[in-house]
Structures are given as structure tokens and as C-alpha cells.
Length: 142
Image (cartoon, rainbow, N blue to C red; front, side):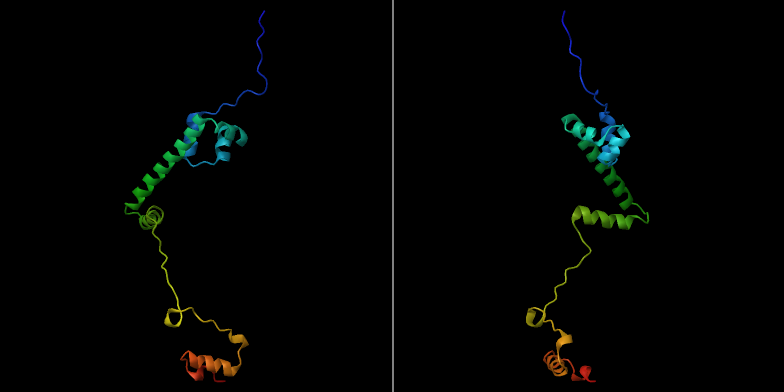
């Protein structure tokens, strides 16, 4: 008589691969997806080591990005009050544009700025430095 071995341990938790992809498309975190699927985070992470589940998760993330981008474009091209902020957002993130301007401050003859600690100078030193900078003497009159 042939004996068959019984499997030991817990049965594998069922993770619906289609639902996993949809959850990734909604930009759910691993914790959120695990809670929704009724499994532990650890179980879901182990499942994602399987190339089929990993592919479903990655595909879901990409599809979610496309869906979001489609909505952003629709808003940016509309007459909605949200159109201008959306255009600015897209131009920053897609085109790398920025609304910051680069300003360079230099000292005399394009040299470094000179910094004076006025708290340690005597009245005479203040007047001398002011004169060297071309400032009127009267600003230090008492």
C-alpha cells in the first residue's frame, strides 16, 4: 500500500492577481493592498517575489500613472479654474521647468561680497568703512 504525504503548515492565502493589479493602479500602499486582500503585509511581500504577482503589481502602477496623467491633461486643457495650476504642475514635472530664478550677487569687480561685523567696530571704524564703500558719513552721526 502506497502512503501519500500530507502537506504540513498553513494553506497558501489566496491573493487575487487581478485585484492586486487594480489596487496598484489606485496607488495603494503594500499595507493597504494587504488589508484589502485580507492577508498580512508579510504574505503580500512574499507573493510579490513571484514574477507573476510582481508583474501584475508593476503593470497596475503603470496603468495608474497613465490614468492620472490622462486626467491631468484633461484638466490642463479645460477652462476649469484648476487648469493653470495643473499646467504649471505638468510643466515642472514633465518639462523640468521651475519658477525659481537664479540670482548671483557679487561684490566689487565681480569679487566676493565683503561682510562686516558692525557689532565689533568702533565708531571710527564704521565711518572709515562707510567712506571706503562710498556711503555718506552722516549715516553714522550720533
